[in-house]
Image (tube, rainbow, N blue to C red; front, top):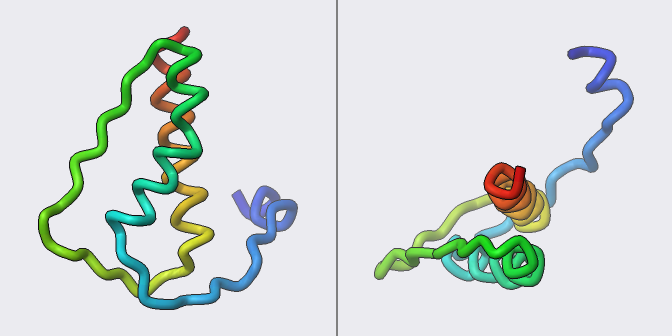
Amino acid sequence: MKNFADVIRLPAPHKEKVELNNLASRAQMIMSSISEEANVKIQLNRDENEVVLFCDPHQIQQVLIIQRYILVHMYVL
């Protein structure tokens, strides 16, 4: 695992207050064409309340996109 960490260096996080529902919606929008091509429906259930995180929004969005990508391709295989 250390060798992998040496190869893949993430940039330092730039943390800020982020609203999770909006971040998840943007990630879903980015992945919508891929999931439609695979005929996979991914449903986002937004929380009625505002959910605020203190995080790097770009890194969290990447995690959400990768997670959705994996889900889509699990059902295609």
